[in-house]
Length: 86
Image 1 (cartoon, rainbow, N blue to C red):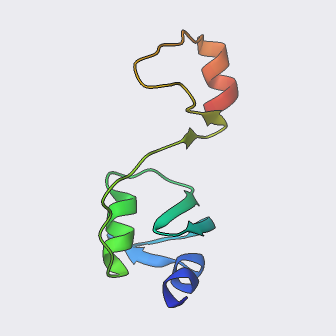
Image 2 (image 1 turned 90 degrees about the vertical axis):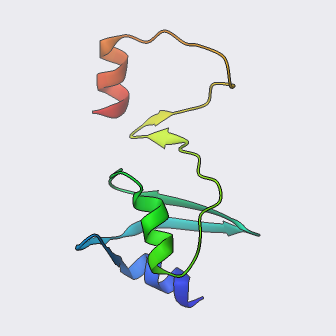
């Protein structure tokens, strides 16, 4: 409970406060939304709270959901990426 409150309030990581916009806990799995994607930011965020991240999977970048099955490809256009990410 204290860790969830800290995530919602914001946690100091690498001299910058990281605020989590949405947190959903399902057993040992935590789904969260953050505004930035600095290198290892999620691992460092949980390290500050005293936890170790064992597995990490990005499922969305901007409005682009990463829903392809492993080993599959999808061709996308510049316009599609501009619409979904920027």
